[in-house]
Every structure is written in C-alpha cells, then in structure tokens.
Amino acid sequence: MGIIDVGKRISNNAWRLPLVGQVLEADYARSFARRPPNRFRGVYATFAEAEASVPGGERLGYDHAELAGMYRHRMEKACQSDYAVLFWLRKILDAKPASFVFDLGGHVGVSYHGWRKYLDYKPGLRWLVEDVPAIIKVGAELAAERDSPGLAFTSDLGDSRGCDVFLAAGSLQYVEESLPSILVRSGPLPRHLILNKMPVYDGETFYTVQSTGRAFHAYRIYSRAELVGSVTSLGYSLVDDWENREQHCEIPFTRGRDIDAYSGYYFTRNA
Image (cartoon, rainbow, N blue to C red; front, side):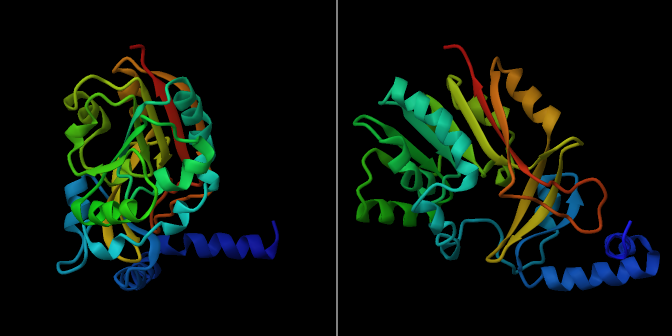
C-alpha cells in the first residue's frame, strides 16, 4: 500500500475520531446549508423525518418555478443512463405504437423530448407526464412551443389508470408513497414497468436529504431485495436489470450506505 493510499484511508476515516468527527460534521452541515449541487446529508427512518430535518424557510421539494429549468440538457439527446430504457421502450412501442406511457415525475417532459429521435413516435402515442404543479405548468408551455404530439401533463397519480407503460426514470426516490401502493390504487396494473436511475443498495431502506443546488429534498435509498420483492409480489416478472455509472450517492459520516452506481429494472406482467 502506497503513501497516497494510506493518506486517502486516513482522510476517509478521520470522522470516526470523536472530536475530529464532530468538527468535520459541523463543517459539512454549514457547507450543506448553502445548497451545494448533488450532495447528501443524514440518515432517517422515514420520509417525514428527512423533510423535518431541513431548516425552516428553506426551499423544499420540486414544486417551485425555479426548479423547472433543471435537466434541460437531457431534452436534446439521450444520456448514458437512458440507453437501457430506450432499448426496451423501443421494443414496446414498435409492438404497439399507440401505447399509453405514464411518466412518473417526468419533470417538464424531459424524457419525451430527449428520446423522440430514438423512438420515432407514431400517431396515437399518448405520453402523460406526472409532476408537481409548478413544474408541469412550465412543461405545458414548452410543449406548446415545440412539436409535441401526444404529450400531456397531470399532477394526479390516478391518471395512470389504463397505461401500458409505467415509467419512473429517476423520480421514485422523491416520492413518499411506495411504488406498490401507487400501482395498486391507480387501477389495473400496467403491463410494462420500467424503473431507472434508482438509488438501490444491499441493505435496509432508509431516507436521507439531498441538495440539488436549488432546493432540499427528502430522498429514499431503496433496499434492493425489498424493491424487487415488492414488485414481483404483484405478479410481475423481472426481465432485465442494469447499472448506471453516471450517477452515485455519497452520504458523509455513514458506513456502508454509499452507492457507487444507480440501478434500473424492467418488469412485465401478463395481461
């Protein structure tokens, strides 16, 4: 082991020393309060506890016009983490061009716009984006400016009823309600279920707080076994899974909770 490796190990573990750890945690808390982009803080048992840890007066969640400008780079072309979804979604849409895609937490229609050159949308396709009111207002305005056949917006999860494809691309971690609950209460279960950019690890589910640079967000870290088991218990079969090295999650001052790569899944259910 070289000098650099030893130094890195000491640096990574210095927080475990009682006095040093307290100083480092206080310093990190001050830094985190300034809303640095894509940083995480804390471990909590529930979504509500994570939200309650955010100081009063700070912007919380996505229901703010200031957050509608995020992810615009994803509207122009596919990113590395999109390709597994594109592979399966193209097969689905080729088999049934007039499918109904329900895009949970789809922001301003980022995936619809970013993927259209890869999926060749056909007449009859219905793509419904669900998100919070401030975001879908901007999404509808953008859709009116662009050629966006079949694209619509809603803030009602119940509008997923009758969808062929239930898509959650990097959104479920921000939703307090569990996936099985969402699926069951929305009516007949969709045939295709695609989950992508999921913070999943081999431990127990917990919650943390994320700073996106513009707001703070309660953020669920999923137990891999619990997530897959909860979906297959509804009668789904796991067709494929993959890793997204484009994203990772580091939660300082914790052990065994960092995620080096996010996960994706494609499930199907017999009609």
